[in-house]
Amino acid sequence: MNSQPIGVFDSGIGGLTVVRSLMEHLPHENLIYFGDTARVPYGSKSSQVIREYAIQDTEFLLSKNVKMIVIACNTVSSVALDVVIKRSKLPVIGVIQPGAETAVKSTKNKRIGVIGTPATILSNTYTNTIRQIDSSIETFSRACPLFVPLAEEGFIEHPATELIAKEYLFDLKLKKIDTLILGCTHYPILSKIIQKVIGDNVNLIDSGECAAHQVKKVLEETGLKNLSKLKANLEFYVSDLPHKFTEIGERFLGKKMGKVKVVHL
Image (cartoon, rainbow, N blue to C red):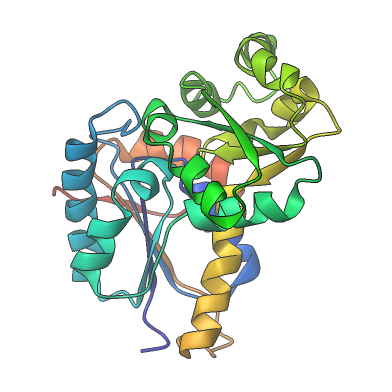
């Protein structure tokens, strides 16, 4: 079972930042990624619809005989983690808990900011998770939906991105936060501008990077880590527009992707 792949899914392309972290920390683990590009974005949809999509995404990965599922999507992690766990009966790692735990360890003044999609922010999952860890911490949240298309368009250090970041982050700056959770897997692509606008005194928490550390820990604890020293096999699947996914995805992944296959759920 150790050589079976880890299944990773997201609503689209953003989850590739999680794959990138997994490749860095677990270079010998085989990975299967599914991006639901036909129905992206999830962040503006209702909880019921997101839960239905999450079940379908999970079923696809289970059909590929994966040994673990990583939800590389803050939106799904915030509103549908329970249905993925119930349906898969495998180890499941979301991005909320690891990100929240890391933020709690990071903050010195107990004032944490959270940015994410409307669905993630509306769910209050980060706030509730942080409160469970340390009830004395204050959290301040802001939905930043325009960051997703800006990241996908490659507007990484564009003046328009900086203007929008100033608009989104203005209130959070006033709250004197010292830690900011990037609660969407697209946002690390824009981390330079986010850091510039929010200030160097604020520590940015990449929830996907935190999830990759958690995956490594669980693999070691459960004895599921792949002990092979062979080069990992990476497979990429989408539900629509494979060419666009490849073009943008290689920017997110930082390497060539090879063939991307289309599947219909």
